[in-house]
Image (tube, rainbow, N blue to C red; front, side):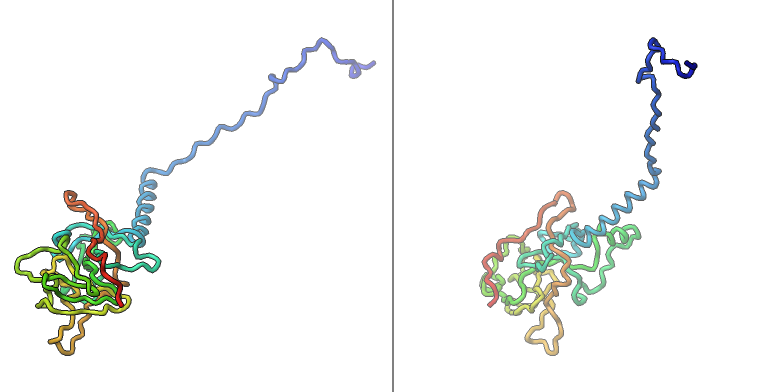
Length: 262
């Protein structure tokens, strides 16, 4: 028997499994973090995109440019306008307080809005109120007829007198709720399709639809008192500044009983 053919020594110690060296796994690599300045720029970019999307689709900030909506909304108040209500064919309803683009130089001198470069940029992305817009209350919608005024000085829409004491300014010397024509005896409408008739709550100091009506005494009049609904940015839903006057802005009950136009 050769040496290579010798049987294994039975007394040889067996090799234990634990003594077998297993390959060492590589330690998990640490994730690399962006430098602080890059993270900051990324967060600013995301915030900017979100702000633009929110302004375009959901909410936008504005300010009250005049005293025309007193007493509820005072000059320089900051408000938020929501756009969701007018999605998918929704249109302004009677009683809504809306913001709309100047339809035909109603503002007179152009409202420059923000003048500081920083606030201009903020206005573009919806973080600062813009200029060039008006804020009024929708009094009548397509098909409606507006009449001023009954013996109590109330405006009527489709024959239904409006009790507007809850939001219209009470001013001495103003005889009715539609005085800006120079008298309290006028009729407007029917409102054309796709348009609204708007008025300020401070009826004696509001360059609204009543200021842009063609009166019977006027000849060759080309004024238009109606606002195209495509110019409406959205509905005011909250007064945010000053903080001590914070409050929600809703639709009053005054218009609940107005019948549909015939």
